[in-house]
Image (cartoon, rainbow, N blue to C red; front, top):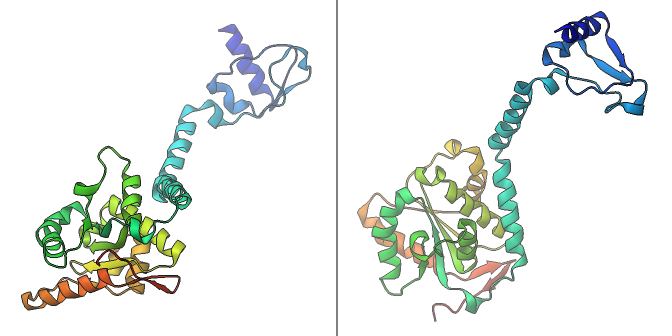
Length: 263
């Protein structure tokens, strides 16, 4: 108690404190407001020299608040997501582009799990069971079990002639759909090709699309898309247009590339 009282008296008496030839291990936080700067005149037997103390250094709450602020900013601006996506894209860049004979699917279908009923009841039977049959790549059926989800997405897109997006309100609320959209956007920018086919399952107001789906806005503004018709009589025309879009020759850097998958 006398030692604490003496220290309290010393630090309260002046704004600067010189400590000579003594080892200072701990200063209680209750006294930190009086310690603006410590100066060690003789460094022969001291642990520190010329250190400025701040309240945050003594107050664990300040450090915790700073940590939470950093975490909050990273979450708000999706910093971790962009780091993961950039790393995945760089890994994909190192892989050689598949040749036409190495493609396994006519189209990789990107859709929300909430829309799986429409995909399984309408899209798959129409494209895979009606001649000429097309081969689709679907999440739950064709992804490698136990594999990293981003690896599965990248492999599926790289092995497919087209990437088919089933757009809906459920789609823009799905984080995995964002992964697929972002990687496809990287591929479009990298190869300058024309591999995306858009299906608008229900009306989507572009202004309601979250900011993290800014690439979806760009794609919708730059490409035409097929709308699922409400009129039953227009459905055959919808399937005809979709087949034509999937089967048309691919354009890469302005050059037409015809694949032999349908021969």
